[in-house]
Image 1 (cartoon, rainbow, N blue to C red):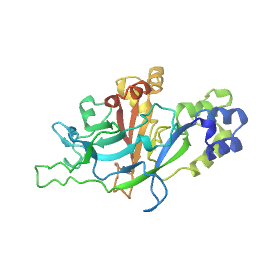
Image 2: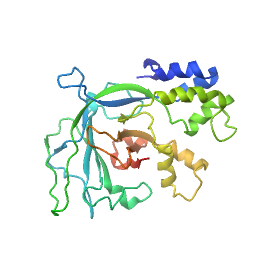
Image 3: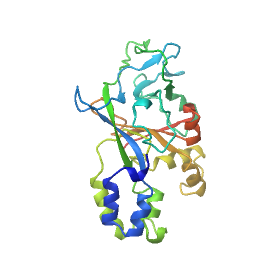
Image 4: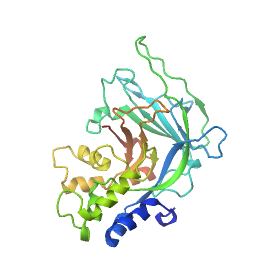
Length: 297
């Protein structure tokens, strides 16, 4: 599905509040995403495409993901790729099968161990699993924790349906800055005066939660792609080094799962979980190469 095939208040907003050239530069940055929202009510005509929480359905020969030396990962969400609107994204997502997302959320060790993109030894604390279409699966019970003081619980199940929408990069993303400045040349830190009314109107459109497949991530702090890139490059170089920019452009959002009260999910202080992947790895179904980060207030 092309950008032009999706109507969006973002496009109207840009053309209403920005100079024409800046508006078209910014509109050119928009990318389609599947927004996952709770099914309004039982019996709704909305197609269920996934869910938050509950218990995962896994093939019999697949063990529950574990971070060795720490414990089992929590099941966060699953998405039926075949149920998503066909051709809705600009990334090579599988046409069928199920994506399941797991994360070591600190339940079993009181948040002593943390998953961090800058620490390769912690990368086993998150997992993206693609279960092929047609695989024989069954709902898996929670692993038994051999510690009577530990409560390992599933998140509350929330069925999800899909909404295809255009998404924009964060207002402080370098691409946004370039688009908004006259002539596409950033002259100083901060936004140009002529963009202030647009940014205020854009802020009013923000939602309270973002569960996304594809599109632009909605960061709580810094641009997520840059956070991934800077950490992978070793963190010794400046954030604005051209090498960070080049590496950041190699990564795209696979999934974002936000804090969600209905699912009893709270990531830090109202934060979000992000899984990013290189498009070539996604095309080859190399979900083991996806990178994870969490941001919170």
